[in-house]
Length: 267
Image 1 (cartoon, rainbow, N blue to C red):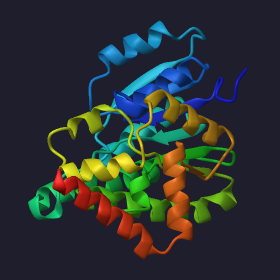
Image 2: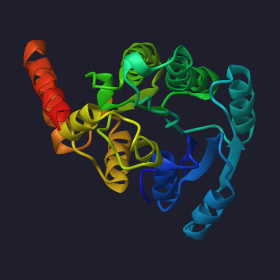
Image 3: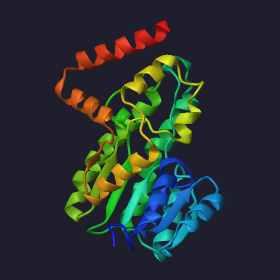
């Protein structure tokens, strides 16, 4: 019997990337899964059932989290059958364009999916949360520091960090624990899609934080949820950057960033 055994875990963005890896690790620990994604689930469900040795339940819903009304309806439908013990929100996209190259539509799409999508899920699930329940929201190292080519992405993730700190103060008295997962770059379909799109200077800055294997990042996140930690930052380099941001003046942090960009642009 592990921490997640027999718990009902809602996972958004469960059809690929970190959400899918989380579903894989949780099903092997005997968690009951309620999965949400705008992408089809056919192959995902086959994969999960193949490793479902504990006969845990797996239910899936098609969901576009940018549609607030539909998100409310789908989560209410799911909760009428299996209310959540833990909610894990992974839906998000990157925006690997420099500000000068980015259109308003591109900027708004990143904000709508990352920020408003998170808001919609939290608002929809709140009526079904009670004392002892948990919510995990995916932020990023970009919640704390900007990066070349990430103005839209950083804007969305900075906002999520502030939103979740505020919600933590509001929900903690009700016994609902918040975890914010703020990883460095992870090898996922999203980061792979940046190849050939993101400028070399952006790639150089991302390398400062290192890149984690998805399996290791998810293990760190799940341990943080189990310990009911508010902030989970996996990876040695990411934690060094986090400490640098806390204890060094912003001029020093910007100096390192500017030097990295200058070196990348000379290549």
